[in-house]
Amino acid sequence: MSVAEKVLDQYSSRVYKNRKTHIVEINNNENENQIAANVRTIPGIMTQRGCCYAGCKGVVLGPIKDALQIVHGPIGCSYYAWGTRRHKGKNAEGVDNYLQYSFSTDMQEPDVVFGGEKKLKKAIDEAMELFHPSTIMICSTCPVGLIGDDIHAVAKWAEEKHNIKCIAFSCEGYKGVSQSAGHHIANNQLMKFIIGEGDRKIESKFSVNILGEYNIGGDGWETERILKRIGYEVVSVFTGDSSIEDLKNAHQANLSLVQCHRSINYIAEMIETKYGVPWMKVNFIGVKGTIETLRNIAKYFDNEELTKRTEEVIADELEKIIDDIEYYKTKLKGKTAALYVGGSRSHHYQTLLHDFGVSTVLAGYEFAHRDEYEGREILPFVKEDADSKNIESISVEPDPEKYHLYLQKEVLEKLRDEKLLSYYGGMAKEMEAGTYMVDDLNHFETEEFLKLLKPDIFFSGIKDKFVAQKSGILSRQLHSYDYSGPYSGFRGAVNFARDITMGIYTPAWSFIKAPWK
Ligand code: ICS
Image (spheres, rainbow, N blue to C red):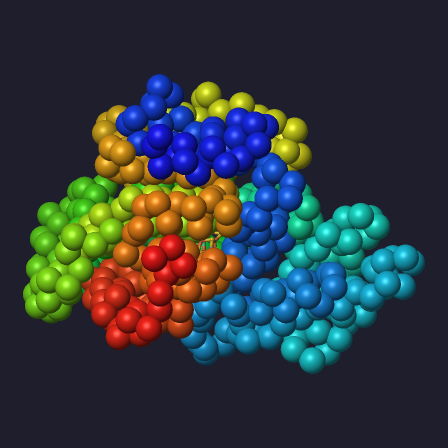
């Protein structure tokens, strides 16, 4: 029996049939690494997934520092989104910063019974009086959709009354099958109401957006530092440490860099269709990943000076970290890891682990779609179901005034053929034969796989971290970085290696006995 079969074998036949399609042994199956993804979790199974509201308010909107975000719903939902994701933001002159606040209508039973719109209006009036924001965002939680409060009408009312921008997001938690639905809803509204409105003067033709970078633990800052050193102008970051003014100007950049494909691919594509800005999948996690990414970007801009400068910066950055990298390699080489995070990092972090000779035995996503596993070539074959059809998909047209192309059409086509633009190859292709790829890995399967595969490190989140550690396996949180970071770029790689080396070599392990030993 293979490891996967040993895990699956413990299920009843119906659950077995379902879960079998979500577990793939790489290159060792008749379906060529095909996986079932973005479908409902079986009721009663302890999933690690989050909700639609988490994906919209928590993930995509949360890091926008000068939008005052009011959660319309019970206080628990608000509290959950209160900075726990560690998306950092600096104070800047003339830009409001609400990241330290949690704004909520604190819905109570009477509001659910008699309607909550009045309370929401009151909350907006109060926020205006206390903070004078120029933008307010309203995010719905489950009960709001159930009782039918019209938050879009309230947003319109607020715009007229207070002369501000007010955008409503119908991101009730129950929509879709995971937080992925919330990403899509947030993307749609940002595209409709913000992107394209700015007219800030862009200084450099080497101008980029960084999409799908939320500045967890300061990752975005390290990425920006490197790009700026080379000479790029970063027009906007979606949405780590960002302001509304940055996001408004995204259409003016000459290239969009996509770090997390899952959460922002909708905007990447729509900016391209509407404004002519192509997108490139990048990976700033891992030393090799960062170097390859920097060279790819230089290739797109195709400028001799810029290419030279890229190589100079790479050489200089490498020189500064090489001793540390070599040292940590001696500590980590030969170790094995399992990774289970949302919809992007389980792939990216394999590159970083590889830098230190750590191999991956299992990698999973909570809510990614098939393209993050199998690559975008699978998209024409993905069947829509009732759940995915429920989430609005908007289409855009080229803007008659703001559409601009940096490269000629033929050159763009060539780069697309080379898969340098508009392409993401997914995780499966880069995993070794015999390793495991799992979708929506649940609590039971986590424990079983850990017992059988015995990785040295399990990268995951707060919900399963301690189960792993109590069983004797080091666990680091890849969502929040356990209060550490940044882990991106050159300096981040050293931080990362230091943290896991400390974890593996702490004497604490000698006091723990794994239950199966
Ligand atoms: Fe993208 Mo936690 Fe990102 Fe990814 Fe996304 Fe989430 Fe976090 Fe995780 C996220 S946007 S919150 S890279 S910053 S929803 S760590 S898919 S699950 S792997």
